[in-house]
Length: 171
Image (tube, rainbow, N blue to C red):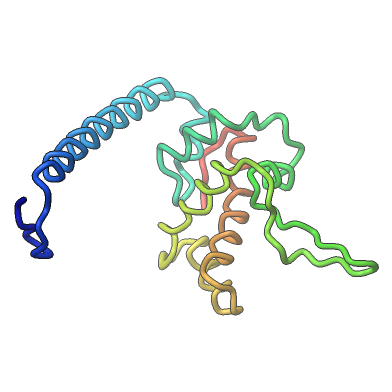
């Protein structure tokens, strides 16, 4: 047994070898992912539908590629339908005669939903329109996650228009 440098506990010799093997495997997988990202970027380079979302703040190559490959914009009559498909539209809660739209939607494309919401993290603290909208949501008492969802929904309206019109975003 060897002593662990951090905790001082004794580590079986096989555990040290296993950690090194896992680290090598992770490095190889990271290289594979980078190669795939490059192939996808090359395949989409020059594609107008791919290039236009890249002009929207907070949209990077991976998010744009996911949107272009997952969404046929002509299938949606408006941004509300796209938001519902992506899972960022609020769900109506009905009870008798009252209707509330405060609960989050459970359906939709979970991968796109997560991608759209988590990519909004890069907008927090910025002075563009989406960063300011996040600050407004927080000032109204929204929690961080709910404010991110609201920003994702607002940004999806812009993404819909950019993809529908095949025109770059301009503030």
